[in-house]
Image (tube, rainbow, N blue to C red; front, side, top):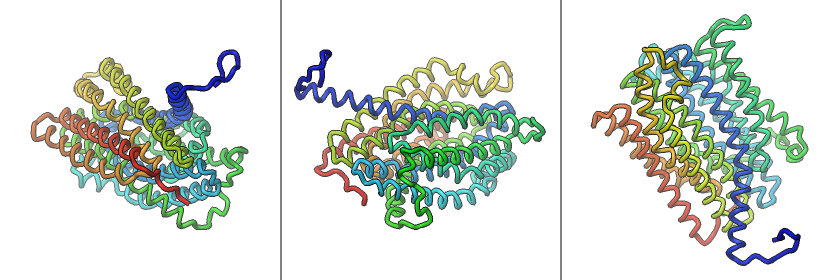
Length: 471
């Protein structure tokens, strides 16, 4: 290490250790920042939709929330399957297996298309599914119309996930962030045109939000693909070379690692989707408040999620180099950063619930008073699980970088379904706490998952061998 005069001095072990940790925090933060920007852009599009649904009225907001819950549940499962490509690409890059990079991207795009087809067939039947779950018939019909417009962007959005995973694993996540932020800016005027009827288009209401989302998602995929095929640093990987040629070993490996990730994400997402169903049984005002608070919690979650995605890449690179200390530093640095960030989010929820709610509804209207009352209550409870959410997502991504996907799945099933949803049913209905009890159940499920995932990461670090590389 050089001092201020340019002379090199040898670091003692303690200094070398501190320098390695400092370098890891810097590298992790530099990679995470554009990924966080990409995630915030994605959730900002969803938030824009929710905000403008609220402008139509509480009924549209409630129906849109139901439709989005079903759509997002399936989309997040597909997302989970495809994010396994980031770990595989990073491991291949760390091992200098450049052909392996191309194989993973190509088969990832295959799987994106194959996952989209059955997902869209299910979403086409949104109304009967929601009515089967006991939801209001009118709200179910409106939700179906919204989802049927939105699903035309389902396949392109999954293709975008594969391409952004490729860019992130190559430590070049800026391009997906720019594309996402431009898409976020475009989403608002398109919503305004299609939802409220401008520039010669009819006012389509909730359906208009679905139309604009589908258009934006298609443009996002096309823009990022065009950039990756033309920019020199990405072009040399020739990601579409022999695109139609099957590569079944890599195809199966993506599914082997990705399906447990998708199921684990599905367990967590379904925790909130089932919560929406349960709260829908309680009342419309409670459901509207749930949609508002969950949207704010989703925005704050994007920061530790981006940190976790960076952690998967950093851990994957270290695994490819067979660097055990690097794996440990990347994982613990991500867990620390994710937890600290969510402490600040929790403080915001506690200190400014009315301000946050005012972004979604007009607080001066008497019709919104009840929604405001429940939103303030739920913000206080949501603050409690922010820290747990930040820790669990970082730990889960560290495990993915080590190709451990089945353990987190088991933890997710136990934590989110048995403990989380079980607690929500018990506290919300058996103990009569209503919407507050449902949200307290979410806190309990996330807390269990956070502690269990960190324990598993520690267990992996104590093993004698790093996971085998995929060839």
